[in-house]
Length: 419
Image (tube, rainbow, N blue to C red):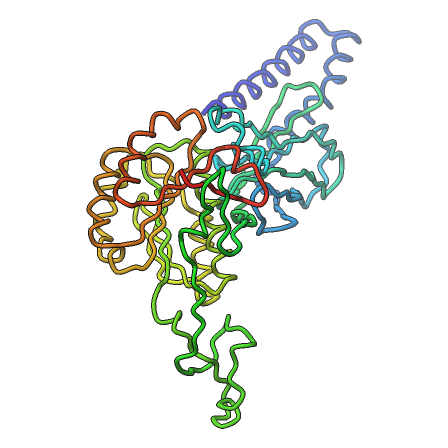
């Protein structure tokens, strides 16, 4: 509406100026009056041409150097404009409208030092540039996106503004140019090797989870994508003329289930830490041939039974990339729909950002049905005192509590301590 009003004002200004100069020349007469009129006439013609020039018929494209990246990564983006007729333009402003998902930055482990100041990571990305196209039929603008946060970023709009030499006519047009950038969470290394203990900081996570790599062959089956080369049973392969692999006892059921809390209005940096920790654990356990399931409770619960195959693991990775916290959900209530999956699992590991009374009561009920329950609490160091009493209640019921503050999240490799 504002754009149309501006065009109308420009049109009225040009018409009024033309009529005034023509009237002056007709009534005044003489060389000076007609000289002014004919001197203004080329300018008027150009102004009218700019006014009716259809910039909406330009072809605008966006090219990304990478359409898939990791969090905190960088890509190069190129906006290219093509037009058929080389109409002279004094200037042209190209602007790529950034999606809301790119209004924050991810500066790797440094972001966790701002757990109590999440607004420090909010930025206003303005990717625009003024060009001087002149008679060019093709012109472009290249920029670089850095510190890209996790998620799916949908680019949809490019805005172009142009005008005349004198600023009498200004035009703009929005182009629908759709591109998708997928940014996966980072898989950080873990210090989880064997039965590691530390007397000052307590048992590490692996020591209590008792990861048993029970690779005892119990049968054979046909080869599946993702199977290790060393699992191939060459005798059975030669006998059946089909690639056969050994089937291990570990394959028959889920040894571990990671449960991620994506409810409540969590601090965005805390939630990013929870997602990063969960994905890092899934990656680590998969490399150790430990079959692990994933359950996320957010806007809608999502359950993935196993990381055993490549396809299943890629589905988890894609889900964690898209996952955003639910600002209205209650974790202890939403998880009731998945009670059977919790009690049927082996080791349960809850990754949460806060501990409240409903959560404690839910864990108490679950403890009566499941033996091995662990809670990994990701929270700022200053909130430890607030949750201390609830943590002690969980420990009294035999639940192992581990904690990660901004100090642990900023370390490489990752390491957690038992409370």
